[in-house]
Amino acid sequence: MKFTNLRLTGFKSFVEATDFEIRDGLTGIVGPNGCGKSNLLEALRWVMGATSAKALRGEGMGDVIFAGTSMRPARNWAEVTLTLDNADRSAPAEYNESEVIEISRRILHKEDGTQSIYRINSKEVRAKDVQLMFADAATGANSPALVRQGQISELINAKPQSRRRLLEEAAGVTGLHSRRHEAELRLRAAEQNLERLDDVIGELENQK
Ligand code: ATP
Image 1 (spheres, rainbow, N blue to C red):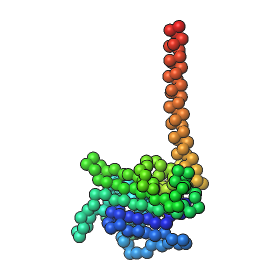
Image 2 (cartoon, protein in one colour):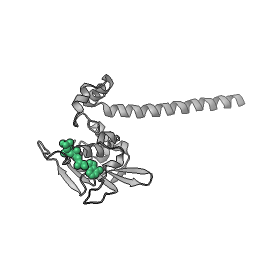
Image 3 (tube, protein in one colour):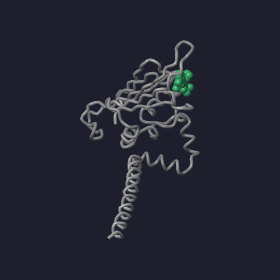
């Protein structure tokens, strides 16, 4: 999976639409403390379907929206778009026709909280579709490929269970786990239906 561009609009300190190009080779971000370097990595996690506001250094998800400064008013929505190069046609079948894949997440302030809208190539999809797409490619919001500040020391002190999750992600089996969970839920529902069917058959036989 090859990332080529990250576009931030109204996300944290990036109030104007800003393109962050990711070219071949190594891309570095250099700047003084507080200039927004970590915000960029958070935007990447966020567009891949991050659900924890705390991991994005916020109290609630609405905190990713530009909160205003003494010079500029706050905004009430934010959007991040990640562009993937699909020249090698390695995307999931439903998107594999396209040369370029654009994944976007938009968040809006609403009266009763916030709402996130996800799109893949302009078509509205569920958060789960985006999360699964990245999990299958062994990356995503919680991928061990994205290392944030202080994470290494947290890992050293982590519980074995958390370390196991990290190793599984590194081994690329996370997508399989979420699929297994979905399959288990479906199987359970099917079992319940069969039990109900047995009841109905039993009742019909009693009526004979
Ligand atoms: P450091 O390396 O010191 O951690 P950094 O370059 O990684 O700094 P960030 O921590 O990414 O910088 O950026 C923090 C900046 O983003 C701060 O100036 C903060 O005020 C601003 N910021 C964060 N959230 C918002 C928001 N919702 N609206 C406006 N500005 C925000």
